[in-house]
Image (cartoon, rainbow over all chains, first blue to last red; front, side):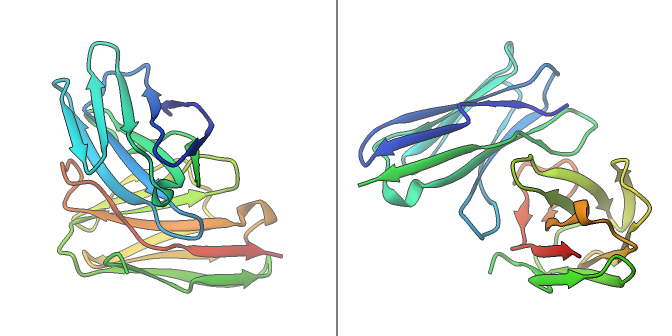
Amino acid sequence: QQPVQSPQAVILREGEDAVINCSSSKALYSVHWYRQKHGEAPVFLMILLKGGEQKGHEKISASFNEKKQQSSLYLTASQLSYSGTYFCGTEEWDTPLVFGKGTRLSVIA
Amino acid sequence: ETGVTQTPRHLVMGMTNKKSLKCEQHLGHNAMYWYKQSAKKPLELMFVYNFKEQTENNSVPSRFSPECPNSSHLFLHLHTLQPEDSALYLCASSQDFRNNYGYTFGSGTRLTVV
């Protein structure tokens, strides 16, 4: 079952913050976050496992609410290099990774 | 380079042609995947191989035929494709099927069917 991401697109000025949400109707084993720049491969950012954990990666962090089957990706003090399309991917216990439609993030000077 | 190499980077083929996409990884990963990425659509899982065994075929038409001769190599054989099959085909690998370290993607093969 494909997770639902929101928003579809967001434009930020350098230094602003953003939140990208990912939700599923299924009980999840894990949530992955990836970033893909135009013409490049998706790059793994982080994984959150069931248990409601939170993780950080430079100024990018994420949380996983196991009760709601929701994950949020937090980008703080955005930089131009953060531009790209962010995908969440979800795994149920016995299924491989299924991706959302992505959120296109544009950071402008 | 991500550690997962895909060739060719671009491919144009006619509907009656037969071609193959190649994916290679030397990361020591045991699971490999084919995904299809079309414009304005999410990444669609096509096939999963875990320890060289196919564990998932996500209702993919038979004109796509995967092959995994060993844990480092994955192929996607194409024949009698349709124009709607034009897309970016991404290969990925992970340590194993249920892993906690994420997937490593290749840069993809941009396929155009004419």
